[in-house]
Length: 607
Image 1 (cartoon, rainbow, N blue to C red):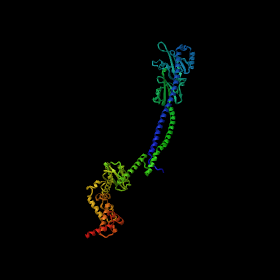
Image 2 (cartoon, helix red, strand yellow):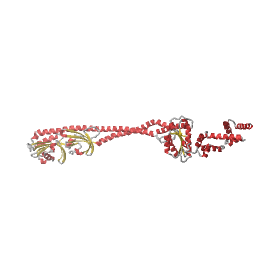
Image 3 (cartoon, rainbow, N blue to C red):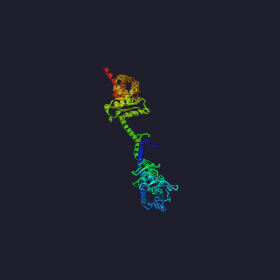
C-alpha cells in the first residue's frame, strides 16, 4: 500500500482550482454563447416577423385604398348609381352591382339603399323592400348613420357580424352616403368586404403565428387565425414587457389571450390602422432550448475535458512537491499519515532539521565543548533546565506539555538527556512559563549568562537548581540564586562540614559514590557536585582521592601493613590502581615513601 505522508490538500486544491477555473471559464463562455445564440434566434424571428409584417401591411393597405377609392368614385359619378330611384332599373342595377362585386377580390356584396322610399338593391338578391333585406344589419347601420355620434361615420372600415341566409358572416363595411339639402339621408351604399378573404392576405401558421389588423378604436378588423374578429385587442393583451433581448422599438413580449407571445407591430397613417404580427413565444423558447441543449452538451464535454486536463496538469505541477515531501520524509525517517498539507509538512520538516542542528550545537555548548553560539542576546539570557516530575517524556501528558515548552523556547532549546530539556531563555519567556504554571514539570534557572565563556557554568547552575527543586514538594521553579542565599537553604559551611565528615567516615568503602553521598545527606547529586566545586575547591572525586591518599600516607608511616592491605583499608580494591595514583600524587611508590619517612625519623632521633 502506498504511503501517504500528507493529506494531499495542496494537490486537491490544485485540481479543484483548475476545475473551478475551467468551470467558470467554460460556464461564462457557454452562458455568453447561449445569450448570443438566444438573441440571435429572437432577432431572426423578429426580422422574419417584421419582414412578413411589412409585406402584409404594404399589400393590404394598397388593396384597401384601391377598394375605398374605386367605390367612392363610383358612388359619386357612376350614372347607374346616382340615378337610382324606387322602381327604376332595379333588375339591371342589381346585375350591375353583382358584376362589380364578382370582379372585386375582396368585395363580398354591395347594397344600394333609397332611404326615403325604404327600398334597396343589392348584389345578392332582387329584394327591393328594406324590411325584407336578407342582411338584417342594414337597418341597424342606417339607424346608426342618423345619430349625431354615429360610429359608422367615424370608421371607414366598419367591422360587423351579421346573418345571411341563416349563416353568420363577418364583414368590413365601407359606407358611402348622400344627403338632401335639409341634411336627411337620401341614398346610401354599403360595400361589404369579406373578412376571411382579407385575412388570407395576412401570415398565418397554425397554433403559433398569426397577424391581425386593429383600427384606431382597438377593434380587430382582420385576423388571420379567425379567432378574434371584432374583439378589442387591448382586452386580450396582458403582462406587457418591452425586454425581448434585442434593441428594437416596435416589438415587445405580452400574453395574448393567455398565450405568451412576441408582438411586432407597424402603424399606417392611412385609415389609422395598426398591423400586429403575433408569434408564440413558446415556439421560440423551444428553438432556444434545442440550441441551448447543444450548448449544454458542449459545456459538459468541455467541463469533462477540463477535469481530465486538470488531473494531468496538476500531477505535473504537483510532482516536484510530492518528490520533495518523500525525500524529506526519508531523510527524517518520518511515519506516514501526518494529516497536514504539503507545505505545512515541508515547513515542519525543515523546521525540525534546523531545530536538530541548533539542538546539537546547544548540547555541545552546555557541555563546554563549544562557545560560539549565534542568535543569543547576552544582555537578557539565562539557562533553564526542565524535567517532568514523572520522568518519562513519552507519557502522553508529558509529551503534550513538552511540545508546548518546546514551542515557547524555540529555537534555543535541546533535549539534554532522556528526561530533561535545556534552553536559553529570556526574562519574558521565563515569566510566560511561570504564568503557565504547569505542575507536572520542574524548572531550574541559572544566573544571567554574561558571556559565552560562562555558559557551561550557568548550565550546571540551572541543573543544580532543577535537582534541588525535586527535593522540595512545593517548589516548581527554582532560581539558583535562591539556593546559595541563606533564605532557602542551610548555611553553606554546615553543608561543607557534613560533606567532609561523611567522606572521612566512609571513604574506606570502595562502593562509595557521589550518589550515595547525596542520598545519605538528602541533597540532589547536582547540588552536591556544585557545592564541592565551590566550597571544597575541587570536584568530589578529587576530594575523595586526596582523602584516601592522606590516609594511605598515615598508614605507611605508622603501621607495617602492606601496600595491598593499605589499599583495601582506604577503599581502593584495585591494588595496581592504588600504586598508580599514589605514585602520580606523591611522586614515589608506597615502599619508597615508607622508607623515606622512616629514614627521616631515624636521623631525627640520632640528633
